[in-house]
Image (tube, rainbow, N blue to C red):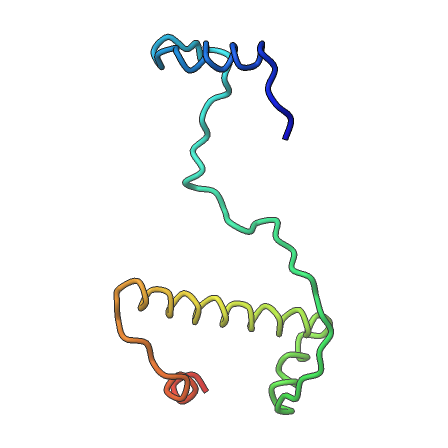
Length: 109
């Protein structure tokens, strides 16, 4: 990191000496309320090809609507993942004891 010049040091001291009330914010952009922002709206995860063994009736159901069965399977799995992740995060926040891996397997499949 480069050293500050005398002029830069003087500017910093001048700014630091100002009271907050004396600073002119008229040219500053407005503060946005991000409370309603949708997290991950433009998130596009990288797809990775996999081989998975599914029951034939599950495959038939996924393919029943025609094209897009892989997208449908991905959507279902993503929503299940988010549901169970949300559920486990809620129980952690409340201080509930965590289930063992064996108990989680029994409950969810």
